[in-house]
Length: 353
Image 1 (cartoon, rainbow, N blue to C red):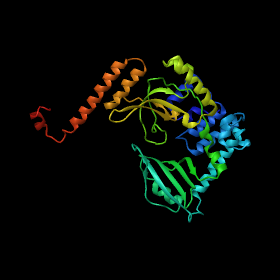
Image 2 (image 1 turned 90 degrees about the vertical axis):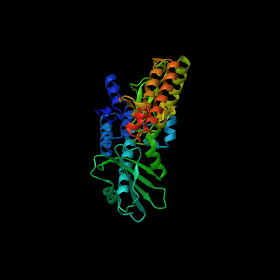
Image 3 (image 1 turned 90 degrees about the horizontal axis):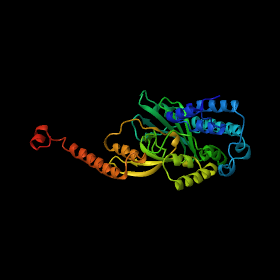
Image 4 (image 1 turned 30 degrees about the vertical axis):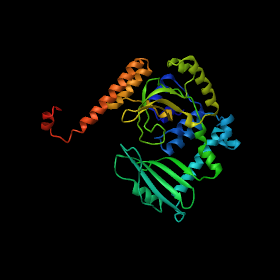
């Protein structure tokens, strides 16, 4: 039987599942494989094939979610049939990506992402062939984390984005301009929603390797967790919410199980800007979350302040006073940096050092 925790993006969630002995259904396992950010396409296909060999077939989607997917009955009523069709589509996309016969009507370009980056670098060159584009993108540089090879058909909406590791290993596809049936199949996983267990509690400082919207690679924005979309009445009460809020969460959870999609797998909390501004927001893809293990410094100490408040360890008075003090300290540090252009001797004479 496949160890599905190896496909989780979060080591903390994987450890929690192993600790509590959580077992996925076949459909949940297929979804976790799909969501893996670091496993190669080859590894995902091998895992799906093993899943089909080791688990009985079952419906892929039912009810309102099935209607929204728009899949033909043979695919929606059979996980195995769906996975075979999905893998065949990805193999076809790969064939279209590297096809040398249409170089007159399509062009290639690439983007790169290096360690420490906050966004993609886009090269201005355009290539006729996939191999030439990939060769130009690859560098013997350990800091090159990801490559995107984009194939765009001229005068068309048709486009394929191939995400690869820095060494060219294919991870996943994105595609636009597909025929309707292929598009429905390609997007089917994104209609899924699951209330998977996580170890996180109200007030934990957590972080995702992606931005809080879940789409940018270099987000790494720690925030103070207040709730998860997967929490029902029991979890809300355990985390200190009142009975009314807990009752509402249970009703919401019931609705989500029937018709929510991947964009609804959210985590809510307090985020902050570099200047210390705090706002309440939600991030998508809470399966990416891990505990933030760095000791917050500078204005990020504000996270510890809000964490303590959410955990009930401090009251609103200390939250307000502490927030003001940390903002003033941060402003003082910025003003001190403006003195770097002066000699130490001059600063001593001015009583500033």
